[in-house]
Amino acid sequence: MPTRLAAATMLLALAATAGASAQEDRYAIERKEDGYVRLDTRTGQMSLCSEESGQLVCRLAVDDREALQDDLDALQERLAAVEDRLSALEGVPAAGLPNEDEFEQGLSYMEQFFRRFMGIVRELDEETRAPDRT
Image (tube, rainbow, N blue to C red):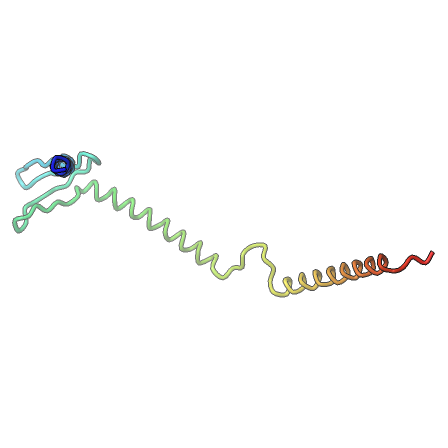
């Protein structure tokens, strides 16, 4: 039992170390004259970093900001189009559904049909119950 516990502890420590080093390997930081440049090795995005109040503060490069702003503008246009379509559809009855008068008229036709049908069934029932007079 102690061996399993020690092995499990070692595996957890190894996994935590591997996860931390994988995160550390994601970014490459290079010192420049006026600060730092950080490269995201997964996406290729570059950020300009500077030391402020003892902390490293990074901002996206101008090209990346412009690309992100273009994406944001396109998404806002799509959202506006969807909102316009939604507001146009609100309050409009679904296609193919009858209004109240048409619904009542349909029920009236069904009632007439079933009354006639039941009348025919009653007549047939009476004919089959009547004694044979021949």
